[in-house]
Image 1 (cartoon, rainbow, N blue to C red):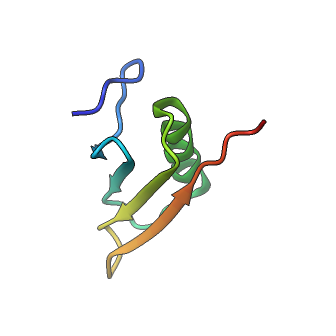
Image 2: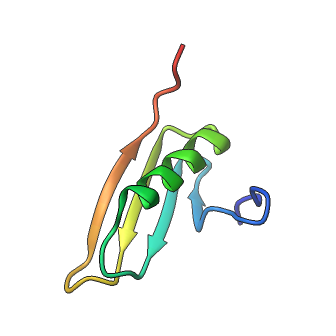
Length: 69
């Protein structure tokens, strides 16, 4: 189980390398992308999947966080 971030935590972190954030909503918005990217930054991970089960068919987005130098 991932460590909590304040009162929140990512849904899953696989092998300490991939963050999985799952939703069950009609559509993913910029807020959901921002939340997932913030989790990547806080957990110091590079790759994440944002998966939505709430639309007519499953949708997903692969996210990549590259720290600014």
